[in-house]
Length: 194
Image (tube, rainbow, N blue to C red; front, side, top):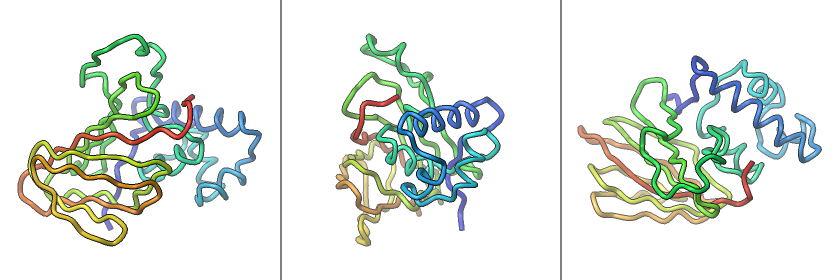
């Protein structure tokens, strides 16, 4: 089974994510076990992540973000300084890569309250499994081609195609081709962020 994208521990991202997750849990008055039950992750794993002692696959990070009604972008970086900006360069994106380098997700720190924009790069053989979000999302293919499976139904996606994923629908992406596939999209925000 292919590993999913993870946040890297070398740049302090893991500790930052852990601190933010702990703060969100404590703001709600939840124990680690409460967060585990709601996210369907183990309490020991959540404890390790909160202490910055474990990497976390982006699919698990998405699950926790949904539980806390924030976006992954909120967990990866402070967006407060961007609230008054209209244009944010890609170089300021919060980037999450998988272990084998086949999938890169760039969470674009645009100051939008209702939408978290992202850029998904699926290199040949790249796969993202186990996705499901509390809110709906859209994806638009700008380069290459890929396969998306939504609620068990597979769809071929090519340049110019747009995909809508309703809230709570299981979906996964796979690039079976020999060229990269670039997708831009946005996932709705269920809460007000951090």
